[in-house]
Image (cartoon, rainbow, N blue to C red; front, side, top):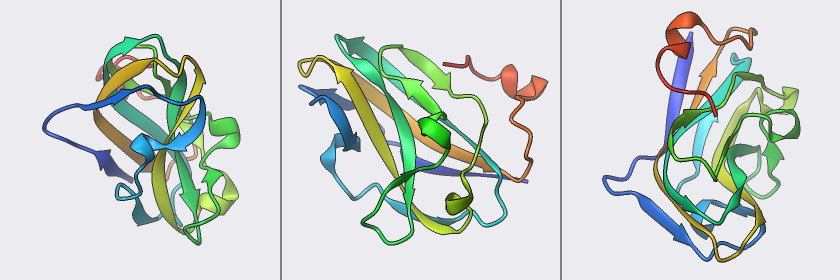
Length: 149
């Protein structure tokens, strides 16, 4: 069983410029958060369409919270992430959910920018996928869909 949550699906890309280094919620806004019951889920990955990356290094990933104020990584070391420096339709590999995320949780998109606060990129789509399978192996059918970041 699989399910997906679209965290960004603008008809136009979301352009992010003059990005501060460090970790922050996507575009600094909270209106892209959503509750999702992950009680039966075991693995996750994210997919995104990134355009025009320029002078930025870092990643985009999803965090969870049970109370809306304390945020945690969905996977160990934010492992389900996508590079902000690579253009294209990208996806992370499947990663195991941490035990605390296997509940009714609030999800948000987060960026971690390592360098260049003058850098920029555009984001056209961001989807978090979840499945009950505990395998972190990408199936042949999934592998044929989009390149892995």
